[in-house]
Image 1: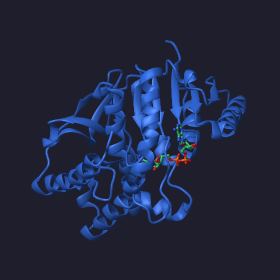
Image 2: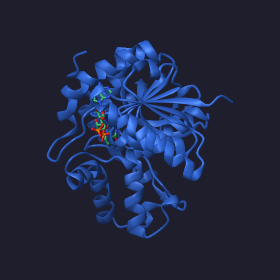
Image 3: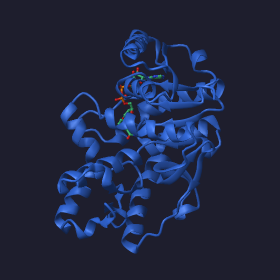
Length: 311
Ligand SMILES: NC(=O)c1ccc[n+]([C@@H]2O[C@H](COP(=O)([O-])OP(=O)(O)OC[C@H]3O[C@@H](n4cnc5c(N)ncnc54)[C@H](O)[C@@H]3O)[C@@H](O)[C@H]2O)c1
């Protein structure tokens, strides 16, 4: 099978880690694209990773570039082009500036990589992936937003810490928009097959849900100059890997909804099957009345931001 080509748009904190993980996991050759002002940074990161490859014997190569032509023919594109939050900012505060960047990126993707499966990471997540799909005109199944894998991994991490168990044995699901009213589903959370509600008291579970919802802000507060990057990179790589190797994994991601969960024409975090067809299937799981109300609240926030997007 031919080696996949992975276009990374934005070579900053997350972009650099995406490049490293792509090489370490043997996903394919990487093109790390950024604006001309960041040429030295992307060329430097590419060279650094290619030299590191000698140590452990990785066979994929990274090219740093500021020329869109090098992105042409990418099988997968991951977008991190955009500004991250600083302490005190909400993701929605990034809308104007990141939308301007998305217009540029989406226009170029339409021209140079019309067949790529595109994973957006830039915030505000649900609005940016909506803009990406509208501007490119790509099939909705070809475009997806990364947030649910990260939000779920934060939730799993806090559960594993609270119980002092292996994180591998925690199964969980976080749905909804990538904002403070995302919906961690306790009823669908198990540890080694045992429902979490049997293992932790309500107050502890409430605290874990709250910390998950504020998980991004916690890291912004610690880093001070930007937001999380290791977790976001690993999460998007899990999605890219499922596409490249047709793994058909079920991952929570911001997918285009066409009536599922009563939502039409918006992207929001739901369980998706990702395989060679992109977002191949959306799973509509049963929710109780309280969960439905929480998901609706989250959607109301997503809709408010999306409806303010001027394309
Ligand atoms: N979805 C999530 O769960 C999640 C998590 C963390 C961060 N984020 C978001 O990801 C984005 C990137 O975060 P980061 O920490 O990597 O930021 P960063 O500032 O380190 O990197 C962003 C890069 O984008 C580049 N860029 C700007 N305009 C561009 C353009 N027109 N074309 C190509 N590249 C361009 C910048 O030069 C910079 O190198 C932010 O919007 C952040 O809010 C999302």
